[in-house]
Image (cartoon, rainbow, N blue to C red; front, side):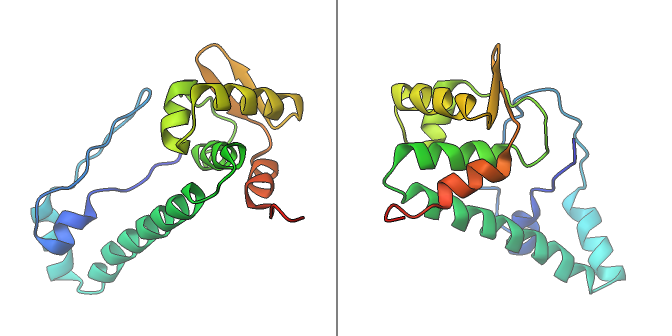
Length: 149
């Protein structure tokens, strides 16, 4: 899977970490110590902008999550969670319906009903203990569709 960067916040602020991350499956982790980040910026001050850019991308994702959670319709919140989780492509997402419900602020029953509708529409495939998003754009369009349309 494509990688992602995290942990730049404590470098930028000089404060302790505020969040914990958990891998849902097998993962390869690379560590860049704070001291190494400081050395990179000392050698190339423009690198500070790159580290800051990572934080901006994270904030953009967080703003989208907050926006999505304001959606009144549980099915649309669930579609958004699945679409965000599928950013790496046709890779099984090892999330339970309970975990999806927590991420979407929805009950397990709402998740079950939505997953059934999404599978019938061909947007997802469910396997034992995982979900494959086959049509992420369809989920995104459904999540963004205005209630009045």
